[in-house]
Length: 400
Ligand code: PMT
Image 1 (spheres, protein in one colour):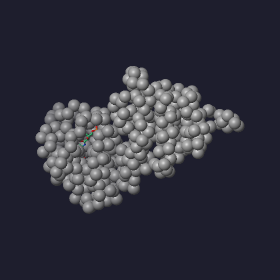
Image 2: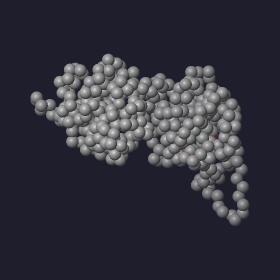
Image 3: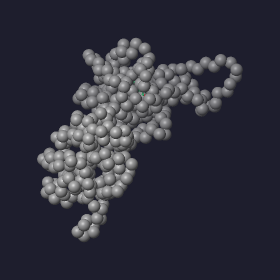
Image 4: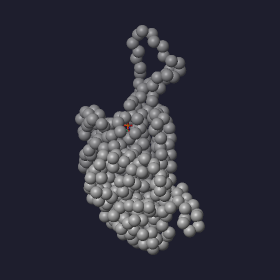
């Protein structure tokens, strides 16, 4: 997984700096190319000569090369790297990263970095537990950086490690896991539906629902991050919902009928589909061409059923394809989800209930149960991107 990967290794002023030699050795043994960037304090703990001997590359430390005054381009390194690993990362460097204090070469490279960044904190327990350090680590996480949790070697979701830098083999394993996951859907095509549908009543009114698209967009980002090409068919979500990964092709639709047509067109060329959209089951029989006026009388709206996208794809599904559905329930959750699983020919269904606080529409979090024909797994309340990881892990497990 690390073969041919280009890693910028940032080393800062901690006693754990000597362990970076072991990190370099393992990265190189696994086929990676390593460029070391060291802070002035880092050089107090380990010499650039040792590091350049191990990497077969000059170590970068100053803005200018001391010998000929050549300017080191932090922008070039930001584009060159497949990952940046800062190990050990002191409280001071973490603070500078969180606040953009670019007073050394390492931080300028960090600020220009286009690749994912991994941080292995190294400090004593009190420094690690200090609210300032914890806040800075949370800030780095909010920037999308990955904290390698001391004492576990896993990428931290909650920060509860013990401060001492994680062992080199576990740091390298965390990188390997990350790259493995990134490529696990390479060459696969995934169709995802997201958001609500709007069913027009007249030029100014519609029947809709509360779906924000957050769950569906999180699934799209997760699939794309694992290397899949994603077709994201989404209903009218707010302008703030943006697909970030370049592998996501977004197709905007408004009504259930439009979503149905796009899905039917796309599904034959897909390896998998995840139907996360909240699709209106009914649509007005007639759409008024002008705004309906108030008359003082009751108004009766006649509705007809919309096509069931999931059931149609379930019928079209080939042996090689996977189909994943959602069930949004308010009562008799499991029974209803089980029945949708069978009726729509899903490989598994993701149940979320509006009875669970923090689950379902609009929220940043969700609480799901994954139900297959003969099994069910309940998950705790998590952020929607984390829920997406659980769902895509399950999808990979059942993909043919
Ligand atoms: O968008 P968010 O605010 O983040 O909220 C996420 C969510 C709550 C919308 C999402 O987690 C969710 O539960 N989506 C499915 C909502 C829904 O319509 O569930 P359902 O039980 O009514 O439908 C069952 C399945 O059939 C779903 O996969 C649905 O996409 C699909 N369906 C339903 C009707 C229809 N006409 N066509 C369909 O494909």
